[in-house]
Length: 145
Image (tube, one colour):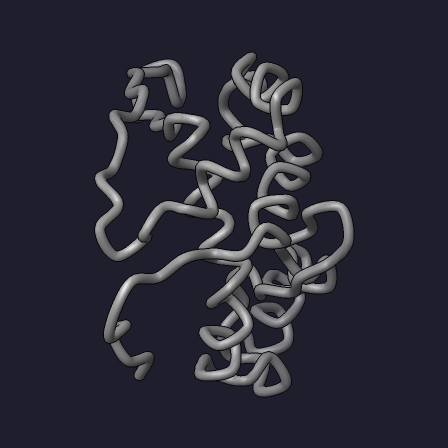
């Protein structure tokens, strides 16, 4: 179990740099085009990052998200949620900081039991281990069947 912070929690500039690279390279949702705000954030990144680094994540107040209803199939719908870009950067930077710890307490990937995305920090904002995808899951299901 990860202990609750005893005091303020400030994330590093490196965490925010990685988070912005992740948003720019991979987007913040697979359902919508990249939010235009990331270009504006990049334009004044030094100031935005300086402000973010000063924020206490323990006391962070979530910003409103965009919520849309989209068709899923011809007869059903799903909700799509897109976090506010500043919220997304804060959340993703937090993952940068705690993701390796969370991955260490999960069922080992070598056990071939859990096939959800595996967290693996990489360059340019890479968040997930590219070796764990849907194909790996379906192949393992076929082996077990």
